[in-house]
Amino acid sequence: MAEPALRYGQASGRWVLLATVLGSGVTFLDATVVNIALPRIGSDLEASTAGLQWTVNGYTLSLAALILLGGSLGDRFGRRRIFVLGVAWFAIASLLCGLAPDVWTLVAARVLQGVGGALLTPGSLAILEASFHPDDRAKAIGAWSGLGGIAGALGPFLGGWLVEVASWRLVFLINVPLAAIVVVVALRHVPETRNREAARQLDFTGAAMGALGLAGLSYGFTAWPALGAGSPTVLVALAVGVAGIAAFVLTERRSAHPMLPMGVFASRPFTAANLVTFAVYAALGGVFFLVVLNLQVVGGFSPVAAGSAMLPVTALMLVLSARAGALGQRIGPRLPMTAGPIICAVGLVLLSRISASPSYLTEVLPAVVVLGLGLSLTVAPLTATALGALDDRYAGVASGANNAIARTAGLLAVAVLPLVAGIGTGSLTDPAALAPAYRTAMLVCAGLLVAGALIAFAFVPGRPKPAPVSPVKVHCAVAGTPLHPAECREPAGR
Image (cartoon, rainbow, N blue to C red; front, side, top):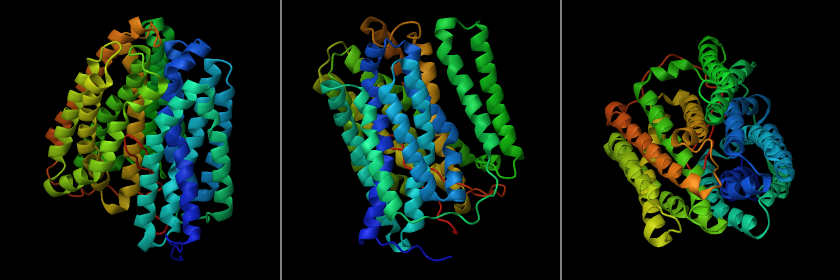
């Protein structure tokens, strides 16, 4: 197989970098700005709490359920082809979101957006991995990561400004021209690559069972507050969810071409890292869903101010994450993976104490800085442990599993937290109902982070070594980071 020929300093390489950065940047922007728009969406469309939950979770559900399948499709049919299809799909779904006449039409369009995201997201770094010369691959991925971080940082400003001066609908409609640019650049300048050794059969059954399980659980928990725990609808939905997850596990155990081979969980460090991932990402899902909402509804912040309130977290992670990764490599991940979530929990306790009409400098900023410091200490060692706990041959499976678990945790957090906090039958846009539920939710999220720290302390080794696992075949590789999900893949033929 010919060696990838694109060079970082050449025009051809810069065009490919533009397409992948802008394509993934569209999803980054969408992820950061939708939460900012929720109060206006709720007001304009007279949306219930469940409607606002599903505005977030509709996207996350289809993305989490199908992202591994999207990676497999790219390997099998061509990464550029699936990437372009995903970008076009995402743009059409964004247009439907922007034109939605009611909240449930918006939710349906968000589900379609998630399908597009699952098709395009794995392809962005897969294209870089497969297209750039090995000597320039690290530079290209580093540029992609840095520019993606900038997109994530600009998202709150752009989204808040659009919501404040125009309409929440522009948050979605702005994706359409950006996606059109990506499609044109990709078709003209991105080379087609595929994995010639990819499985001929795709795990559609596993994807369907996973989607059914996540949908059942999400719907059951979201409907619980309004219908009651004894409602047949709730009981059937939760039963379908549990059965779907069980069927997914059984399918993956028996399949000759699984998306998620169960043998990888024989590695204790890998399993422990993913348990910590679930706890941490569930907490983060609740934080980023509720903090910006609370600042607007209870605190009286404008959309721009609320969206910008969490920017110190991004800034601290950009500055400190690499150093934390180096520290974890030197002393082992157990200590940073234990201390980091505990520091984050302290930050959430401080966030829970935010009053009505708070001062940003004295009440919000200190809590956000503490949270950012904890995440900076946690993320890199956690990701490195999850990806490094298995043999290099299984890097794709490790990263795919970690990404799917993180997204699933965020999905379930948004579904369950309003129920646990007591907001389910109230309104997320009513200050009197949201304020006490917000405080409870932040403390629950703090408890999740402490649980993650305890798991890390008990089960993550000080200096983990790759653990032997049952032979599995890598079909796809998708990895993520907490604030700006980044998907990477094994180069074809490795």
